[in-house]
Length: 409
Image (cartoon, rainbow, N blue to C red; front, side, top):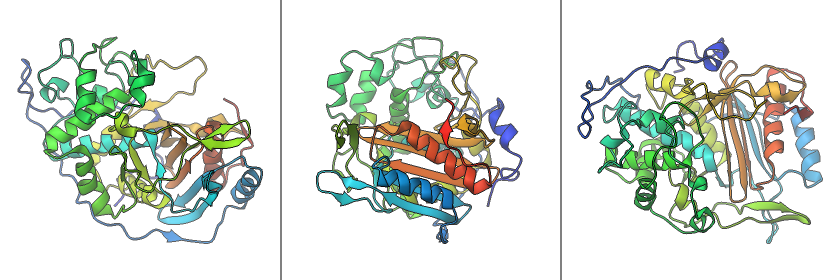
């Protein structure tokens, strides 16, 4: 069942600053008393009917990708769906440049930061179940509480507004990036840092905050973070090709690459253990479509929880460079009229997230007004603009807008 009023006429709601639904919970480890949580029943998570594949109906996208792949300018997989109908699904290029193995449409890719929406959904699901609240002080769950953290709420971690320094902003990042870590290691390390600004006053994209959220999921649920995702989301939905590679076992994920002077070269060591809650998941085109259908059609979160996820929690100071496209800072997702950056521009407000890490570059975007999903997963890190343009080309052709030929920004 879709949420009432979500499909059609939702663009203005998504782009505006939406007032979050206030849900509060007890915080026994802090001085201030707060009210018990308002629990909204979460839906049962059950297998979805299989998406229906149809013949390709996007000739312009087909021609574009065939041309790019023929020139060695695109390496990855693309799926486009309207509702439960798959209208495009294809893979191009190699899974491993050293062996020459070709990519297949059912191959597993690292999701990188696309993973954040699963962490956010886990927190909101636990809120639906009455086990926590997004208004909880982080100190309720991270104890003993580091000095200076009293003002940080779970909502600040979810919206990248905690003020804590990101992993990549810390001394010794180059060495830390390649050293394996446990979730507990990551939590202990983050506890050494104080917020750099008042929580909630600025937005600053933050992987460390999502690692902390994974720790909260573990403590609130009584299960390891990865097991919670598996049992709560992946198994019930039949997402058999989705999971975490924080254990560094590979799990059949295709090889990541960078674009070298002579073509593709193997990417760096992934070591996603250091982004366990922020980017360690892998998945496929089909599993990601399953997730998008479930998330946006009311099968994962309560209506109240979903509204919080896609609301704009961004403060006035978003830390964006001058001229950057405005976006709404949701929980694990963003919302923006991405199509305004295409040439020619068109209007298509989308709920989306990108992902980039160790030889991979991805984008998963959803257009609520017409129930269109576009998934672009690539194993070539140096395809940022290409991935963005392909996503908007797929959106444009699906909804009948002029087919973009470039990007304005």
